Length: 493
Ligand SMILES: Cc1cc2nc3c(=O)[nH]c(=O)nc-3n(C[C@H](O)[C@H](O)[C@H](O)COP(=O)(O)OP(=O)(O)OC[C@H]3O[C@@H](n4cnc5c(N)ncnc54)[C@H](O)[C@@H]3O)c2cc1C
Image 1 (cartoon, helix red, strand yellow):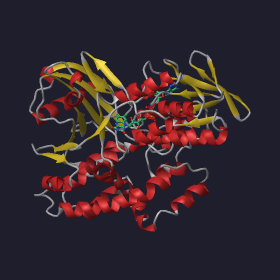
Image 2 (cartoon, rainbow, N blue to C red):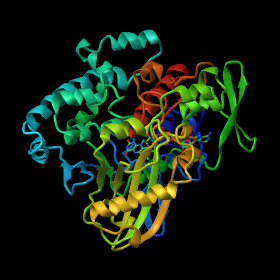
Image 3 (cartoon, protein in one colour):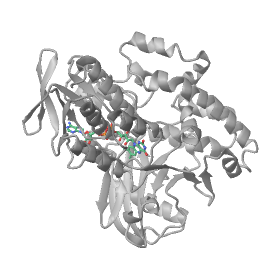
Image 4 (cartoon, rainbow, N blue to C red):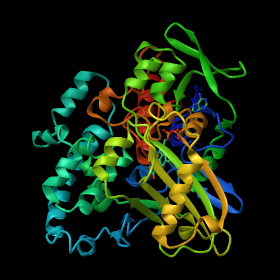
């Protein structure tokens, strides 16, 4: 039987482990943290439960495909969100409710964009075509050579080419006139960890995925049920997971890795290795590759870092739904500063999730669990986080004012996780929350490959390899990586 060792138990690592066991490999996972899931994690404290990072997902059919391929029942239940989320702009009590139904959505913008339904339908028609023209050609594919990538790109209808060159913001400007509509439908850029001003317009197809194609989904009992369910499957498949093991080196022989070494000096041997640690920084920090030196990694484009808060509050907050965005009125200026400047984080934009609204057990009776995510510059631009408490205080007081509830006075639990924590917990480069950004020169063949440049038995899965970031992408990534392994080593039966 062939053995595979997977470094990391994020969604990419867990789904690769189950896929490989399906084709007969004996799999072991080593994980730095005491708990599985990576960024898809959970915090339990003071009687409250919070999803640690992801709070919803798109492209749910990728999970179904995974279960079908592995011959299992999907070990968790998900349900579609509708409305998807709400948006509030500072200085106003108005709350935009983002419905999937275009007529209902148009009613939200009736006074701002009289032709909203017509414009949106046109926008969705164009972005939908783009999505369907690229999903199977580009997003769900391995590229073994630049020629293969170029030849595949050439099959995408030429009409989409200008969208590679202009920004998502300029695309939105062609369809909508109001500040509110443009800002709201450009928020998807932040899911890629970028701003709409530097995200190519091709990604406007994400608006089609959120409103039309498959929408967003939540998981019954909270997002961590995904991990708990997958862990059940790993148990049934005799996949061993060893926690509190950090891999810091490799043992090589010719063009193969024979073992990886942990921080206590122990060697972990296997026939092949899959790295779920960040695919770019592992090549630099552990393999010491010239193309991934610290300087070169820093010159790459990384997604924003998360500043997250997990609050337990006494009382119910009526002004909040499950998914809420709180934005300002200086979007362009904010977007231009947020990535690069070590700005004092006054008037931040943030997202609030209320897990206790969706899952009764996530807060004690009469209380609310709040998860707040504020995108901030990564550690290249803001290395000092001694002002974490100050930023937390600002956000809490701003949110209190906007929802008309004194959160500070009713706090029962507070945990702050800043980019330094995110970096050290999961080995995220400079604390970047979603890994490498998705610029044209960092996608497809240009993204760190899922096969290694030198060692034939070394593979990668997860956010910074293909196809990209987010939960469905991690599931696709595990399929692409497993395909590469099977192509090279076959199935084991
Ligand atoms: C705050 C936040 C919010 C998000 N929200 C969403 C959302 O709503 N929807 C969505 O789809 N996506 C969201 N994402 C993105 C999503 O979480 C990630 O794309 C996905 O979880 C990444 O999975 P992964 O398998 O690539 O890696 P990870 O989750 O990073 O897993 C990698 C694992 O490897 C371990 N590891 C690293 N180095 C080593 C080593 N040397 N030795 C041993 N173990 C190691 C880490 O501890 C970790 O457990 C969010 C991310 C963040 C940070």
